[in-house]
Image (cartoon, rainbow, N blue to C red; front, top):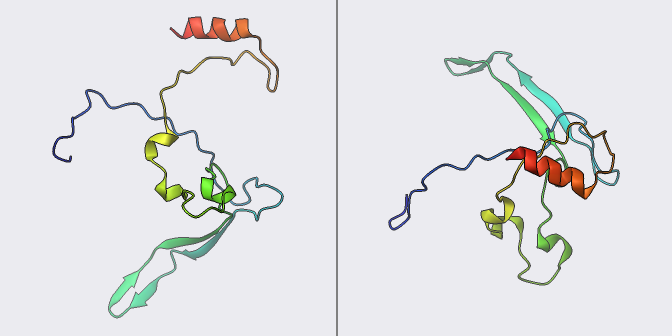
Length: 123
């Protein structure tokens, strides 16, 4: 830890909301699909006196595959527009609450009252 930094009292719980990537994951119709190809699958390989068995996969995908963030530079050609590696990490997480709306049918609308009721039940 850097000098002068304060140790947080508790570690925040982070929930990973990213979508799973797998061979032929759904992709935007204008972008290439996710392609995962076995490269080596534990066949013995020899280098000098060493025999190694390992597995490796080749991965090809669009930079827009799965869960991603479009950086300002994608839409803004102005010099100095931020690329994703220049954006502060704290832009990508926040405090949140989890509401149980499992009783609502998929793609159904809900009312403000239903949201307020779920919020009250969440504590």
